[in-house]
Length: 269
Image 1: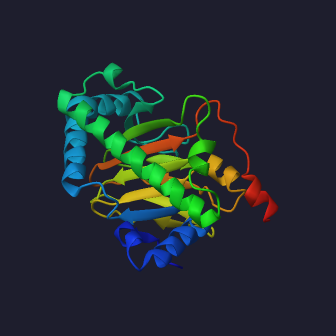
Image 2: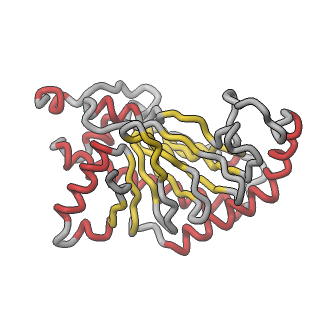
């Protein structure tokens, strides 16, 4: 099987631009996922995001998760659990307006860093959408405009931790699904794996790589591209060792954006 696409974005501005654009095109058409290296977000900054996220989980969420596990008697599972996921999570909304001030327990430093992280990811998402436009033969800015609606795109971040699980064969970290929205940018744990995507009927691991950002495409982007680009089923396998951190940011169409195939892509079919 072909290896999972890892793309060095730094080479986009050099003589290898055509090769990199081809890699992005192939990943969008055949995988629905790719992993970005040298994406422009400083490594030290990502280290700070990771450190503060793990500290916040330990301090504010770990105990709550243990209590939930105890209350649902999940330790000694006999049958498979299909109605919940083995994850501890909270959600930050950035656009059209932020809910950051309403989230309890976040330290001042963590709040500030996540606000800055959101701005960096928003910029990266919009750069990527323009690269997709270029590959699709759409005018620059087409996808951003398609997402816009009357109030701009919706953009939010799901911060998850997947604690060690005693029975990973009985419960998923996150059940198989596709993402409903536009483009998803994931900063994941470099040590603990677990994310898998479905390709040609096989579950394939998304390799954990330090300082990378994993990109995947959502259902609405598949619609706009008239099925040319794929929104792919994926899941998280719970692990017995180590807690896995996952920070997934969703750059999605606005709530009143009307999503339809780009006319240029319908005519070319």
